Amino acid sequence: ISKGPGNSKPAKSTAMSPGPPVYLDLVYIPNHSNSKNVNVEFFKRVRSSYYVVSGNNSAAEEPSRAVLDSLLEGKAQWESNMQVTLIPTHDSEVMREWYQ
Image 1 (cartoon, helix red, strand yellow):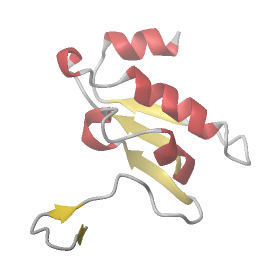
Image 2 (image 1 turned 90 degrees about the vertical axis):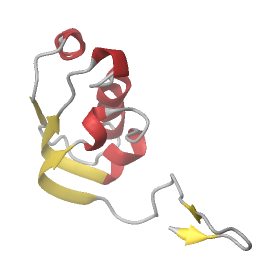
Image 3 (image 1 turned 120 degrees about the horizontal axis):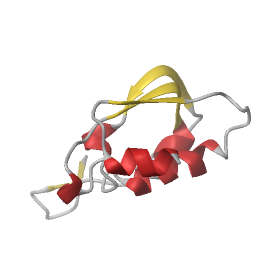
Image 4 (image 1 turned 180 degrees about the vertical axis):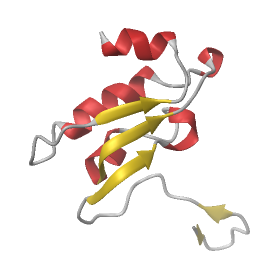
């Protein structure tokens, strides 16, 4: 977070800083898997064998189909064909449809 000149409120950047990908065993997809905070760039950089998919609010589009699709698109950019497992915290129509 940085402050712009003459601006008392912090400015935040939505772009991820450049760098190599991070490999983890288990990742909780932030903010209940809402597409406002997670996109293809997240999955290109944060690579995991297991992702926890939270969210049980269809009105807020959580979990987001766009986030699940971003996982597939981001994973397509990985050099290896590492197996990925999703761990949903709730049963949802979005997850059932996406799995099919």
